[in-house]
Figure (cartoon, rainbow, N blue to C red):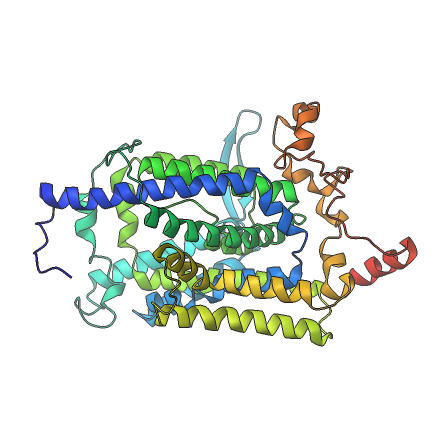
Length: 468
């Protein structure tokens, strides 16, 4: 602790102080991202997937949402009435009005001016609810319905952060090294590496949750390898640009897929392009700072709840009459909530004699998804149980209803445009991130993850029972 006063905000000394910290964060992100790139593209993460089933995915995904309940509650509790209103608006738009279509005029070269019905509420329930709650808060702020700043409920005002909007530049183009040359320190790198490892565990769960909500088959090994590797590349670029954070899957967006039922990759690609353009408009980004915290809290209540529900939905594949499975599920979820909470409220209890190891273990053991997933992983792979009892047979079973043609179901994970050319290259069979990757056992991608099944007649009977 130092008694030296902080430099004046905006002064050269103040800028150098925070830019020095940003350079250290940049270096830590860039170096730790190299580990994620290697883990993904080398296929290391894929090796563990052979031991992962529903009983591992359930606590991992569910704890993503459950572990964030405090953050959602803290934001919503700043004005519960506004949070409730946001939740109600989302429910109205996404559930009650999802089949209501709005007549819209369109002009085409072939038909000229014509009318068609747009499922507006089904496509944009989150956005409509957010804008509606935002506008209502603005009207109530102008009407003087909210108390002044410092009292309960004042965080629902839309004018508390107007100065951010006023000070923001109209145009700002970020570039690599904008804060100077990144610096690297061992402690910062290992601290960031702990976060990277935790995000990898979370991302694997997110991939399965996203596929479930989008109606796609469970992601094959090559898709998960490629996804983790691309996240590493994203972190490397984010570090170079000096954003101050890494890139990973975002659980809130997965919850949004469950509400909007929109999981198109083209939508995500267009959204990314729009974000790049809007990211250069300082006023546009600052505008969203004026969204009241209770509105965000109400939004989190719904999307985090969707993530929890997606995790629990994987229990449909598991034999819930088995005391073995009930024990694994209950223990992994409850311990995944309890121990990380103790770690956060009792910092400094881990003392291995190495500050780097202490920091690494503190981050990992303080992450609910890691603790719950590791507990489920250990118990599910050590306690005796059949593949059918563990839910692996039904979970990995290909669902023909996912596709309407005769293509293999996991073709949705092929690389667009270039896949047919990659299939002609023999070397791609040895690359763990390519769809036609073949492991040492010689099986194809579509079959390598399939567990041994029972005779056809018995297996088909189970499939029929599953769809009854």
